[in-house]
Image (cartoon, rainbow, N blue to C red):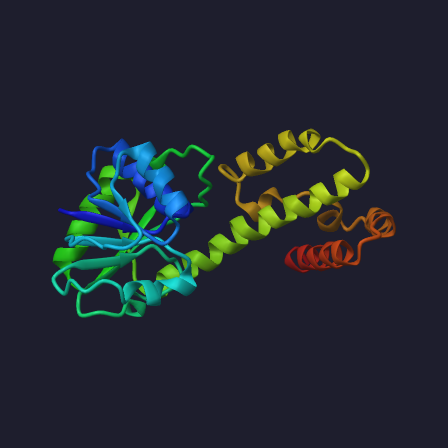
Length: 249
């Protein structure tokens, strides 16, 4: 199978890395950012282009959600299978007479962070069983956790991921704002963060909840509110504590 990856961001980088690691040949990586494409090309020995999109059996579009539709119009090979990597878009967003699919890896990607690709869940959707089987087999070379998923299911997977990853990371950033404002070393909190994440491997998150809100400790809640001078931080603090209280009422 001749494979082309379209994109030069985090997802494209890690797919290129994963495929290379598992000896899956990539014919080309294509995109508009020559500098980033060049880095990927040099690291994984994959030809790249910003102008000429080669013919392939499979195109994997790994670009931002708002660019998927426009990028998909560049593919003129009607015999190809084209899959995007978005968790929130239907396969029908792809514009062309080719066969359409999704190839969604459930993970947060940063180019500087090494990942164990075998643990990443991949969710596959295609227009027919033959293409489903092809994508399942491809993903199964990389990952031990691959399954067919409808768009309806994938939408909720992505929504859950936003709560579990993006929102949580934003709270880490807000926490660091507070620690920085008081010249506290943020590394103090890394064992706590690691234990919080480790604990939910074994406990239901609802059961694992601790803190003043779940205990109903209004004195501590009030003290914290008085300490917070930033209005956005205070709003987040109050909103999350109210949510915790309601969950355990």
